[in-house]
Image (tube, rainbow, N blue to C red; front, side, top):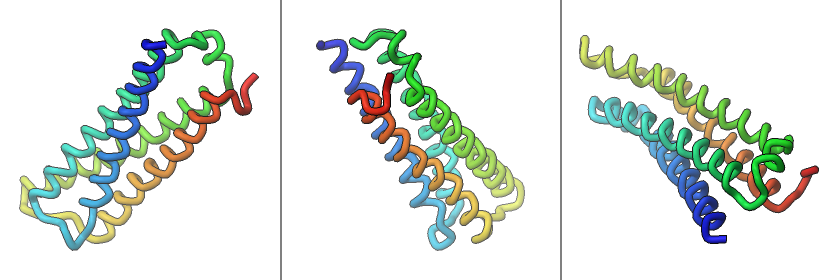
Length: 151
């Protein structure tokens, strides 16, 4: 049970890290707060969001392989497949935001231009959609852990 507890703890901490960095991204991605330092910080926060998403995936795979229920049970569950699909969708949204942040940084370095309000709003929405998907992922995780809607 110690291993199961540590796996659950690591997975939960990874989700908390992901939520923290996505929250930082959405908070920074505002026209009123935009300056050169914020553009650079957004690139870093997004990299940490993507790293956290990778850690969520890795700790989740670890739980399926070494957890009490076993890989056979986990991988036969539709909820697990839904969680993974939503996590991939989140990563795609965060990658889209990353491309924009890097483009803003390149423009900033080239001619000192900051992103406009419309660009910021659209990019912020990408990260917010990812955050909203995470809420569903966590709900599915709770259902899966409690055997709700499982075979």
